[in-house]
Length: 248
Image (tube, rainbow, N blue to C red):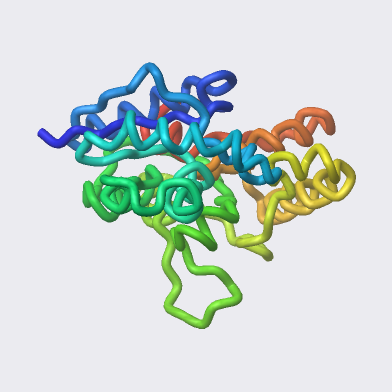
């Protein structure tokens, strides 16, 4: 049985453990043995995004050491996977095993579609759902078609959600617009970040969504804070929770 090394982003580990548990459930149902290296740390993306290269480098090196021996590496986060596949070259280029690590590291939905070949999900999810496409997954990992490219439409998260009986995926006016989180951007440019998040929430509300989902909990965390403070009825769920059949 192939072994998956499970990488859990910091914010999921600390704030949304149910997303991690749902990820394990999905991977095991797909026929993989899941191992969680307990010595794992942050992937280094927050440091890299703010120019702290010296601080990010040891985290990249640690990631290679901890996850290099697995058949696959999977994370329920497009941004963390994009850090490994698109930005670790600055720290690890030429290191033994690095090219192999990049090739076998996947975002969860990408893995379920492209590697596990999931084509059936048995449970119902009778809700109107809006799918938020996170920037890293969309434009670095190419998990779905972005509007600025002329190419056939596709979407790996959408493909999985459509397997659920009873689900209604609502049509958004701007399906690939940024939510405004951007890690430290939400701190440095708070007003702009909040306005961008409110735009995304309004788009989902206008489309009639009951639940907003995404494959990056960081985006959902940002928008959930805005929803909660404005006392809106819209709910947020990571796509792993929905696919695994977890209650709303």
